[in-house]
Amino acid sequence: MDAQHKATNWQDEAETLQAILFKMGNEFYGLPIDAVKEIIKPLPVTRFPKSPEYVEGVINLRGQILPIVNLRNKFGLEPLEITEDSRFIDLNLGALKLGIVVDAVSEVERISQKMIEPAPPIVAGVEGKYLRGIAHLGERLVMLLDLDEIFAEWQKK
Image 1 (cartoon, rainbow, N blue to C red):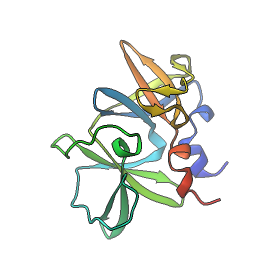
Image 2 (image 1 turned 45 degrees about the vertical axis):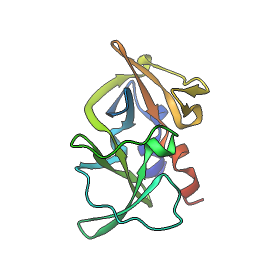
Image 3 (image 1 turned 180 degrees about the horizontal axis):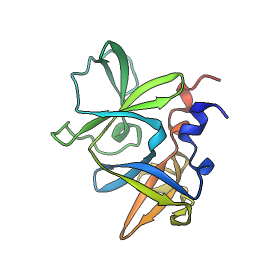
Image 4 (image 1 turned 120 degrees about the horizontal axis):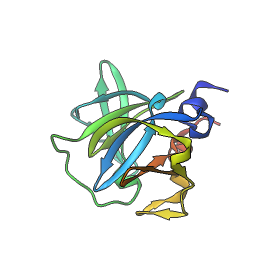
């Protein structure tokens, strides 16, 4: 199995997986920890014309040009200004180099496979195809993202 697939495939994990949890609005989302290179405070974004509306632009991250995708826009959620709590998450998706902007990063959580249910077709405005499942963590529900599906249009075939 290639590193990219392993990093973004929840089902290949053992009984427990580690996830980075973050917020967009009042909802919690999760990414497999192996898919996260680093979490940084927002940097100045250079915008460029004719890019999709969910692409904020690019940043210079220690000499590397990194495209920044706004998941709120990608998922059709109401736009929000960058705040003190906002973060850029630099993703490790094999050959695809990009970052995402999120409202706030919450925590790292161990999630048992028993706590995960399949995602219904449409959840909280996010197309079900973007979700691997929904985890029950106490009283809150966490939508586990399918990075391969979200960024499929940019993945090399």
